[in-house]
Length: 299
Image (spheres, rainbow, N blue to C red):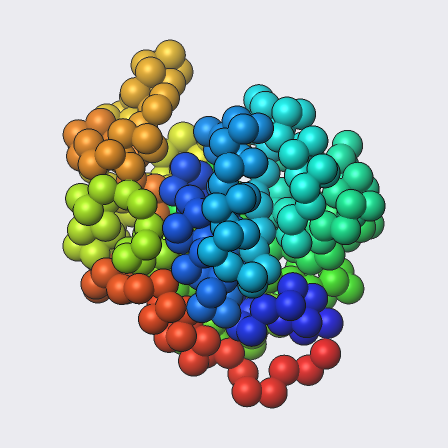
C-alpha cells in the first residue's frame, strides 16, 4: 500500500520524532505542509501530553503522529491518554510494543515501529504493525549498527507491510534513493533540526549548518550508542572509560544542547547534517524532499 493512502497524507514524508525537540509547533508545520508531523513524548506527563494534543488539533486538521520511546519510565501513564483520545498514528522505538500494540490498534490507531534489523521487522509485522521504519546507523540520536543502504532493501524483501527508510536522508536525492531501495516513504529528522519552527536554541541550528560530512561521532556502546555533532562533550565521552563518569557527563546532555550549552550538551544529529546549509520553514523542507518522490508509485 502507498504510504500516502495508509496515513492519509499528501506526501510520503515523516518528520522523525526527535526527543524533547519535535514539539507541537514543528508537528503542526509539517502536517500542514502535507507530511506527517510526529510529536515527541520524551519528558511528557499525561497532563502535558493532553495539552500538546489539544494544541495540535486546534491548529491542523491533517493527520499527525505521536512517538513512544519505550525506554521512558512513564509509558504506562501515557498510554491511557492515547487510548482515551486516539491519535492517527503511534510510532514506537527503543523497545518492544507487544504489551500494548493491540490495544492501540483496537482504538483505531495505526502503529508503526522503528526497527534496526530484519529480525525485529518481522516480529513487528507479525504483531500487527501497519508499517516499519528501517532506521540506519547514519541517523542522529540512538542508533543501531546496520546502514540504511543495506538495511532497507533487506527489510523490504522480508515483510509485506510498507517500509519507511530513515538514516542519512535529508535531501531529494536521498528520498529518491530510498524509493529505489524499496521504501514506501521516508522518515527525516536532521533536516528538521534547522526548520524555522523547531524549538531549539539558535546555537544548535548553527552547529548543524556548520557541520561537514565528517561532523558527527558515535559515543557509547550497545543500546547506548548515540550519534551527535562533534563537541567538547563528545571529545570527553570518547576517552571516558569509567561508566559512572560517562553517565554523569551524558545525563541531561540533550536538554543542555537544546538550550545551547556547547560545552556540556549532546547535539544529536545525523550524518546528513553536512548537507544542511540554512534555516528554512518546514514547508520548504517538505517541498524540497518531495522532489525526490517518484511521480508514479506502485501499490
